[in-house]
Length: 221
Image (cartoon, rainbow, N blue to C red; front, side, top):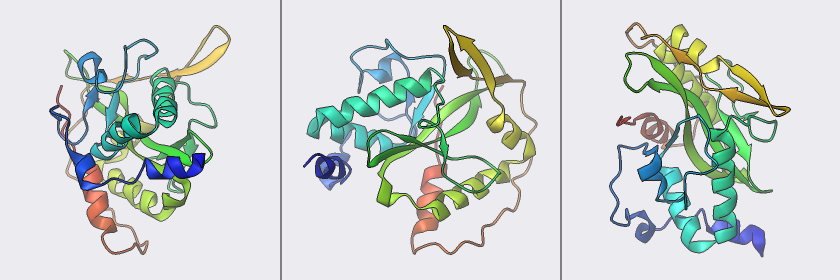
């Protein structure tokens, strides 16, 4: 049954957590030409958006590559669409109710969703920042908990209004009759202490540990 195959592809077992002899760049490997060799036959089809992939999404891609080629190809196609700034209604549906930092879901199949955020990271060869796409993971529809992603957004809001404004800014472009979104660049951001933002949402046991894990990453430029 196709839907069962999709769910099975997301069940990570201990033997699936090996790195296949490949090194990780912190919790969020950067998809660049060398890193792209993990999943992609070539870098053709990618756009201007840089992609950061969480360790969870990395494991799911590796597992799908081995277990279900059809689902794997759908995942890769979606990542390429996002890298080209194709933020259609299916590709950028807001998952959280918070207005702080939007967390989005992109529909891949009837049951699978790719969850991501527009983030900012240091820009190459400058002191400024550029928008990037940070992929948190790949989930079945039943696995999505909006309260959890509301809490992720609230925690990200601790970085301040300037960070929030940069994550929410959009630069639209129309080429060949199709509207896309280009990544915005910014001057250096002023350092500021993290704010005390808390969520009153009741979450299951262990959820705060999961949030902390998601938000800890090293961007190796």
